[in-house]
Amino acid sequence: MQVVHPRCAGLDVHKRTVVACRLIPGPGAQALRAVRTFGTTTRELLALVGWLAEKAVTHVAMESTGSYWKPVHNILEDAFELLVVNAAHIKAVPGRKTDVRDAEWIADLLCHGLLRASFVPSRPERELRELTRYRSALIRERASEVNRVQKVLEGANIKLASVASEVAGVSGLAILRALIGGEEDPGVLAALARGRMRAKRAALEEALEGRMGAHQRFTLGVIPTTSANSTGTSRR
Image (cartoon, rainbow, N blue to C red):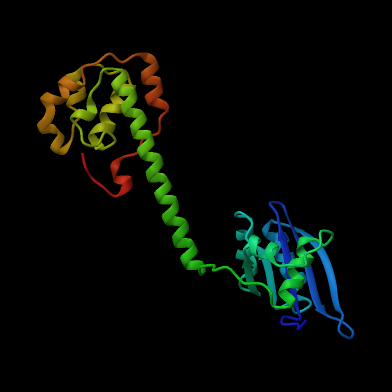
């Protein structure tokens, strides 16, 4: 079978270890094979880069195993032609022997050009995706926390959500902090309203007349709440 990448390596990536199989040209048609295990810390991955570079390896392939491939990709992507391969595609190729380790099998497939790389976005695009996904997760978590706050308030006969369009807005948070601190006077609580909420003071006073117990104050105190400004809005 034709050799496409004579100096290549296959990586079997795990959470704590990376098993690397390095293939380079040997005497005649026989390839020289070397296998070594590295850790997944940055220092260990840099050692992996050095071990591959000392034999002028040009192409490296690994399976897209969970998220474990990402730190390896971060370190190796500027040094080699790097292929991240779908695990199902590798297993679908006929001829794999059960006694051959994954790293050696990946290296053999890569050597003969039998691997199809999955699309991996550029580093700037990956960074942007990571930020936007994290922001979306925070927004979902915030919505869940606000719903829990509303349930606690309802259980205490406080109808803040019926007057305030944003319970976790500037006015709502000021009122929540006062409630947690033990304030019970509806007039004092309503006076904490800001902006457009001040026009609803009478309705607020009626809505804030409740029966909040110590356990409900404790519950509100341990629920993390953030202002509406954290999601890019400014409703009061």
